[in-house]
Amino acid sequence: MNRYLLILIVCIGLLLPTGYSVTAQAADTETETSAPKRNITASEWKELTNDKDFSYRDKVENKKVPPKQNNSAFAKFLQAVGAFFSSGIGQILMWGLLILVVGYAVYKLIIGERSGIFGRSSKNQGEDVSAVVEDINETNWEKLLESAQKEGNLRLAVRYSYMLLLQVLQRSELIQYRNDKTNYQYASELTDTPYKQPFRQLSRQYEYAWYGNFPMTEHSYEEYIGTLMNLKKKLDR
Image 1: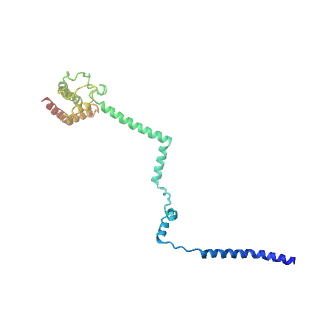
Image 2: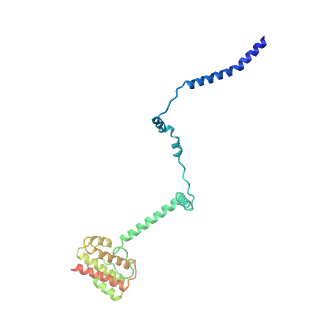
């Protein structure tokens, strides 16, 4: 009898899980059957689809794609140039070039401002001038001009004629002559007069011939001295 009891206990143990599973499945079926069905209206569906929590498509489409690298020869060249100027040697070279450019510009500016009548020493002006004239009003520039023309020294004739023009402008009280003034400053004093433009033209020709030591031909000298004498006649009236 103990043997049968043992067999019965074993059988009950084997059948118990199967029965429980069936009971659980039946309970789930009963729950599903008893749960009421819900119909979603069109407005509710639209509200759900507009919810950001359900916007899976946008998350995929808005995913940023890394830009493609430009592997062209020109792009590599630009990268190499940028890397060079970013290095220590490149920085030194760049600043050196910048200093040279600025220094040259300042040098040209200073030279241009100082290219007045006495902006250079008599040694740089050549051997044509034996003495520096200190008083522009007491010098007979017309006599010196005639002497230079007779000798055929056109460069010196250009200088004496220009000094004669400054003397006339000074006596007409159109400029205030000083040894340290530049031709640019004299032109500025003639701003409100009809003489500024021809004076600037004569000043450029004078500086090219005297300071720049450009050769003066007879034709170019005739044009220069003709313009100067016409301006002198207007000032003498």
